[in-house]
Image 1 (cartoon, rainbow, N blue to C red):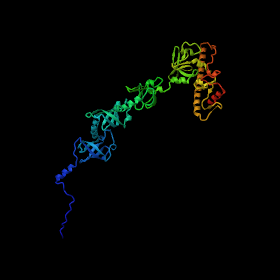
Image 2 (spheres, rainbow, N blue to C red):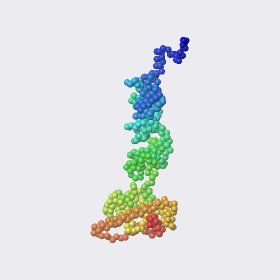
Image 3 (cartoon, rainbow, N blue to C red):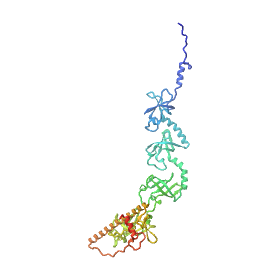
Length: 491
């Protein structure tokens, strides 16, 4: 048998040297670091309470979920993904279980401090996301937890901070203390600096008397602030309404769109005074426009004085019934005729717009209507009526007096006219009931006194609708008008 001289082929060559040299070579592939060092690694596994990070060490590092983010109670899957390259800080190389413990948020914190210190030195601006609303302010993620006091969120104090959560904001750094882990921010300072130029330009273009659109941004006891487009103006409580109000919330709410007039622009103090009521019709002017002498109005007794009675005829508008206009008899004490809070019907005698005074008459209102009569004049009870130069009644637009029919296409005008007519008719019916009760009460009072009804001189007719010629503000008595009234009343 022949000898087998075949040599075994070498598959590896020891080019390192001795065993000791080999161990040193293996150790050189393992990273060396100490507690507190920053390391980089790859996310290799994500659990519900921790993340494993390969940093080239003999074992994988563990990042507990609480060490992933400065946000509280985060889901690890929302912060990192497998394969992500992230930076971490070494908390301890080996805990009691022999694990390498790392912290992503502390690495982020250390890195952020350096960046923020540079921004603070340069008087720069930081940007971050609002992650939490706490007592007194907001927590902003700027790489670490920055505190933004509520008083520094906007140009003015904000009551509800919850809408800011999740928003990205920019702010200036007011305080920075690493030893106390304290970072205080100011968004208001950032807004003031960035808006100063815009504000200056805006104020220079704003002139007294201008009409502007705006949105109510906040309400305080003394008025309401209106955002005119990045710059706020104040409507003082006295300029919110023509009538007296106790609080601005009675008139406007935050978010309301309003039309205002510029009353004053103080460039030195950068203050804008606005008026809401200036863009609305003065109730006194409206009353003077819609009411003429001779009309009957319903009102409530608000105050009784020695010389007469004050009647509220519209919200914020009062007229005076002089003591001589209370009744057809001599009156010593107005309280013998009316009581505070009582609803009465009065005739408008005069409207003095300049002096804001209205003269009224209770006795003439009572004398102008017969409770048993069906002679109704809607113009006396507030329905608008127009006459031409010859005194002829001008029929409403869309009504043909020749056919006593409404023309097709004028349904809206008809609906409005009918509504006004119905309101005037209802007031007339109420007035008749009121006068009927007054007459009944007077008769009972006279019977109780044992006087009976005294014969009185007939009162001269003061009703405009009974005159031969049509007077301004009343409807003429004609067959056409009668037909129109019957049609509108559904007869």
